[in-house]
Image (tube, rainbow, N blue to C red; front, top):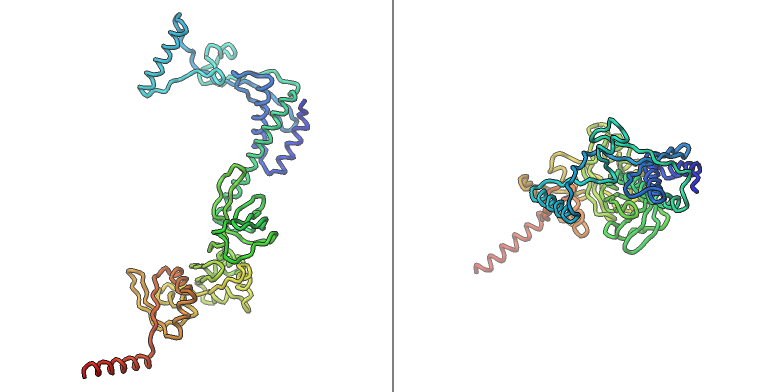
Length: 397
């Protein structure tokens, strides 16, 4: 037998432990008990509904039908003739695009029958027929209820967790490394498990089991065993979040991040600005003796970060973006958003950066195509001109 009072107590515990609403639990239990009743006591033509009292464990059982018009009386015909007639009528209705209305004895009751139960019944009414209230459910019924309850509660728990994690999609969260694999890293985010795939990892970064890191949630999708969560350590949003957390002027809005360009694990450029003339936006980000920026660098395992000042003037902004290189001159094609930047010989490699990284990040940050040209100094020009003249004189002889 199923002790309903103990059952009700257990349900309240589940409700608290799983963080599921009482309404979800109640709907789940009523569905499960209806299935159990139908199996041991009901029949296929009953539309069972159980009202369960979660406080004392009592329940009421009903058969619920919707009132529909009476079917027209058929003339005396053989079963075969009647079947052919019905099939012909259905075919004609289908050809005319009409929906064939069929009587469903499980969920519907004809008007004449309904009036036997409720005299003033009319089409569209709901007829609620109380069924015998069982003293308790048998072993099979209890087992059925238990199985359905476990299944439904798991579904409800997964749905609750999915909704919670879906709200965090495209945000940065803290996660704990659970397991490391060459193809992916398993990460625990609160009550959920997430995956950091190889393509979203930072090259050379260590993912030690038990260590805590920040991750960007790329996507949250429903899966058969719960939410399927994909993370990233390469996202620029992680850098933005770290700046917001570590720098009060940014979190308060006094200093604004205008752009981020990142090559994860190697180098990033962050453009900042402020409308407050008394505030140094770059100094605010660096902090005293570099303490603020160092916290961010440590979180990103030593990734180099250039903080530059944003400027509405594209020429000044490009100059700042190519820092630490010093620029001699810039020629802009505003229509095509192309810039030809001239630098002295001793600044050329600095402007380009290792493997072209500095130039790439500057172009990404400013959204301008940047062509860096080495400016030859005066001595080199005079030497070249002298050599050209000597060659020309020899050719003329």
